[in-house]
Image 1 (cartoon, rainbow, N blue to C red):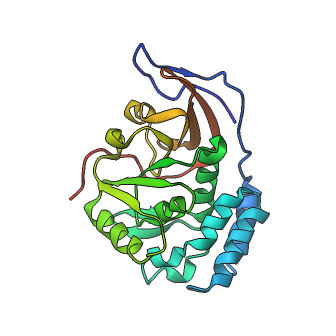
Image 2: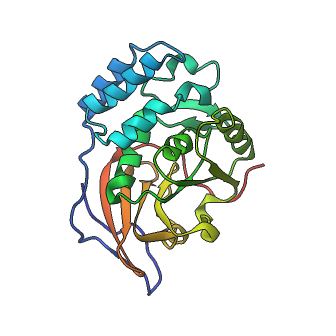
Length: 257
């Protein structure tokens, strides 16, 4: 894990690279390969057994030991958020297409990024950038009191709303059709912000919407990407930590009709 400056900000904003390393070690390539093979044994669609097998594999292979995350992944049925043609692989550790050139993230990536956000143990309000099909928002709703999510693609916004409507027992999730780069300042501050798309840098607008002590988790980079956490330590200071390599779709501005 490497600490370095992620963004260039105005004169009143300082991003420190010398903070204490609070990182959680990411899975090695060998562990990722073993996890993939273990989950490939799962061919079921909506079986609780298959979902439990997936969650147990995530714990066994060291993706996360946070019981809050494991319980949330157990509660939310991933296959419900997927196209019928890909549901047979719902509990395999794969990113699968959901339309509009987008994918549903691997269960291991969802677990990993939420676990990093939970390092501050602040559970009031979370913002997700990139709702996609709604799966991660559903998982977050099992952990945080208030979940806000922004989706820029109109078709995916409608898909997520439809998918989440199937879960009448989940807490209310606030989904907005809009530009995720701008965040949701009227609902800020947030205890955590999680980005499901990679930019060359983290938008200053999002950093300014973090609560003091809040953590932003994001993939950063273009061809080569890495997971980064940025914690707000004061009104004008943030500390950053780099983690393992990853692969996400690019972060884009505006609304796609």
